[in-house]
Image 1 (cartoon, rainbow, N blue to C red):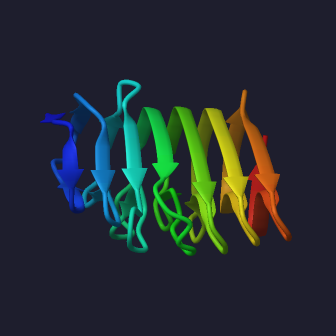
Image 2: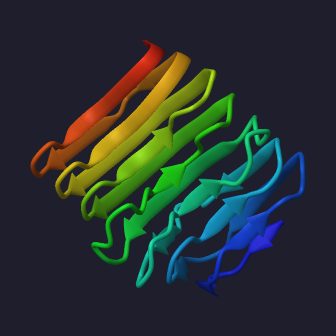
Image 3: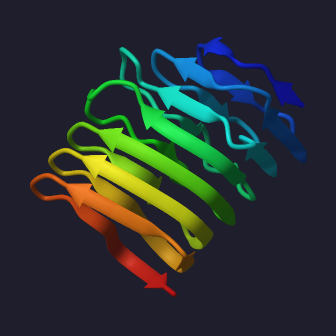
Length: 173
């Protein structure tokens, strides 16, 4: 399924066992994509997602706890404004997630590059490059087990900024 370049308002990705492919850059006032089913792949093909232009939102957010087996790859993610509490990728409450070849630039306070909290685990993160500027920003916020992170960098600036914040049960490789 192709997603054309456009200014969008929270596109819903809801077809199980499907790959959604960007064919151009995407911009949204708040949230760009809501994952609303299991076994979905979003392939940005190197195009950018520019989210939270004028409202709190996420580039990609998981809508319910059962949206497991999600893959996000080949994305360039920008936060359009410095509105706080606007996580770039929020896949909380999901399991078996793969993030590959993602670059993001976020700014503001109290936000996360990747939020994978409240989960039982099994995340693979490869080639994730985060640049963040703001107080209380976190590159990867995680709980659960069996997280694998490789070939990734996080440049965090601001007070109380962390590259990885792991709480509760957790296991990283």
